[in-house]
Length: 233
Image (cartoon, rainbow, N blue to C red; front, side, top):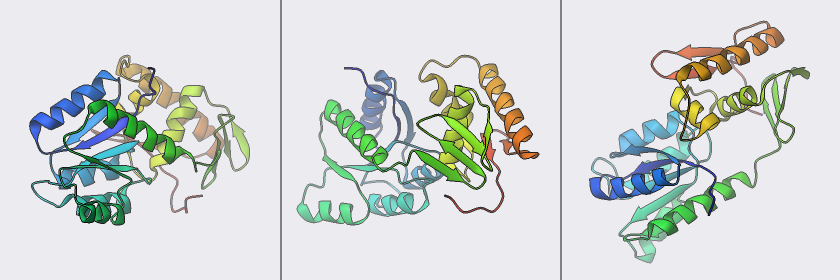
């Protein structure tokens, strides 16, 4: 069965369970990040754009429900949260859903079912995505894969459009180089110079359109879109 690659944050403090999940999802060519604590999970979820967060309720430093609430409040987009737990009482599940969980999977579980639920949640998250993204002076026409700046077309390559769309999705947060490389090439990226070339071309076209520098480099991390004080469209 062919699967579209997803980007997953696995929040699980049990090393054996975490390794089993990560190895299985890596085998599907999905990109996975792992956090063994609630604090790290919140930090990663607010800095990166994930398709789904797999969240264990029993963490060493925080209750998983508190982590869920924090991720829902601070993440750059409304990322679906799939809770993983041995708590199978109705009251526990009700608390989870009330605190923002999108789905619930009781341990032990079949990893194949876990993957199917992730795909379903990711699809559900795309149902209400508009075919046009407005961010300040930028307009991205998603179906046509075209970009406008103050209504004027900006000629971008397909790779440039995909990079810009990813940066707009997480705005005003920065996007790591690894996340951008996975967006373009999945699990088999070329060397980093290829990404630099695409960033350079995108920067140049945006600067020609706007007469200002819209993409800034964040040392040791990646890149961020810089549009000043705007409201998201």
